[in-house]
Length: 458
Image 1 (cartoon, rainbow, N blue to C red):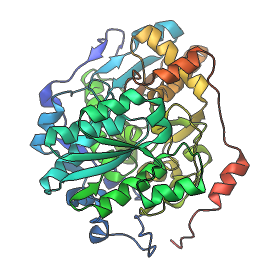
Image 2: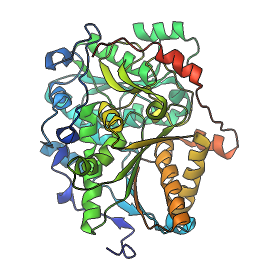
Image 3: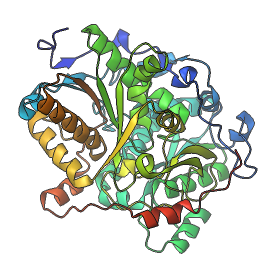
């Protein structure tokens, strides 16, 4: 179809909000490896996971066969507050680049949390409420997930305890205050409030923290506090399932105009946004119906896909969580204090890791100064200040569009704009003042971390 007359924004109706989530694992020939019990190194079943997660979420976590899972009516009603999210044609960016490529982005920033994270936060809080729990605990990096869970918990009337990576707690005080406004308690991690926090502080004096540290603290508090469960904003199978509303809406909007993307791009930290965006397209690829070039973009400072090992590893620094088989830098890896806090995780979703290992998608890493150059260019022509995490995808989309300019190919590019960067102004200030630097871990640093990977006969 001629794409020259496509609207700037393609909206679906409320009735077209997905009624089911899509479980890509049902179409995967090679399923993600099972989670392992950290005490026995044996696969974990429903009963093993009950002390940590909500019952219904465990069922979703373990389901490898059901392709479509119904979205409860209460969740769809909540989704209508900010969904369907628009699919935007980036006409102004195309013109600025002088490219024949057609660029589209799925914008997930139209809610107070400022990101896609609310898609899963409301689901996890809902199932906690349905189970009669008092509250939930979690970690947050850049703060989008913590904000989203705080909003969802306030809406449903349950308690929310957030452990925020210390460097983000200090860099993003306003994000912290949004969480507190919604009633959540917010603690910088690693803290001195938990056994694991005290241990990490003793072993790494002055540490800026990591998502792995914050996860350990949140899990400890959940398992030691009656009436609480732990919830996670990325990595887990259940989270990618909930986030498929992104890809399902994007595909429905493209299908309305007969548009098929050639390239699909998403930023990758733990995998929630990338997995949510690509899942329905990946399903077509797995079933042999269509083919797409799918690209994961991660920070060069935390390159789990591009420089990590595909192995079983702990999901947290404190080594109390289940082990997952994933691309990992090692649970002891403490990333540099880059400004894309949501991508500072040592591992990657088991689903995405398996797909990458099977050669069904590719991955690239980019340095943060190049990311912010792309963010600035996008903001100036498209009118949205993007989150640092999203800007990794913008960088790759611009690079692909410039390749099309060189070759004359009219490829169609789709990328995920996960949210806005209005709480990331310290990062933008550093960039604008020329004070932002790039850090890339050395091979020696990574080898030191790989040496701590658990020995698993699986």
